[in-house]
Image (cartoon, rainbow, N blue to C red; front, side, top):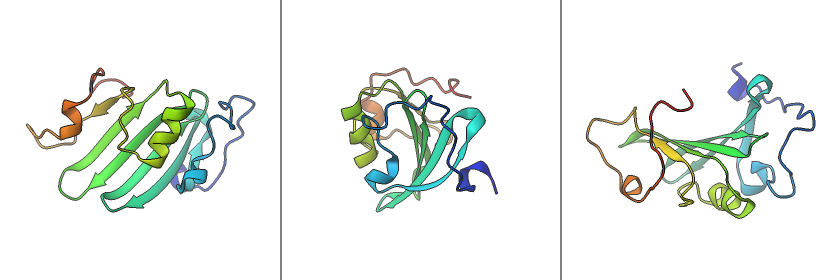
Length: 131
């Protein structure tokens, strides 16, 4: 199986952000699906009325990447780094929560398509970061 679906928890080696401040995503109703130790990332999924959501949690930094597979707008990725514990909880409770932390990848969207959330973000939206 791919790392996303290997169902193996990583050995944090004492490098995970504080688990009391940044609880496991399963505490917020996400399903753990796997991890990739070399990238220090855990994978989770959740199905909402807007589609399938995937969450990548980079456990040494607390960075969260959410990916929505929406039937009409396609794949939409949002990276959020530097989240405080309240913002982290807000994102895990509602992946569309506005934190003013992070940026959106729009490379997989049809040309010219703008989503309302794009208009409300003040962050760097470079498509080249995290590639």
